[in-house]
Image (cartoon, rainbow, N blue to C red; front, side):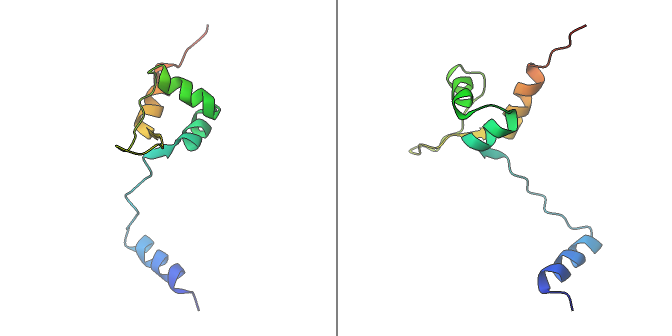
Length: 81
């Protein structure tokens, strides 16, 4: 007999139900990995104004919006011929 989790997933799949929420804010470490850079490299991009940072009002953590990371990639694509 299938466990409850497997049954729920099967029912959701059969009804076309998906999790509509995707992670949008990445931590500094996650954003660095996404762009293939180091932590300090991500800080430099933020300090230089190349990528905006999301911070809580009194928090110390930096978060990066996936939309901004993708825009940075698109902006910096080059074709060499």
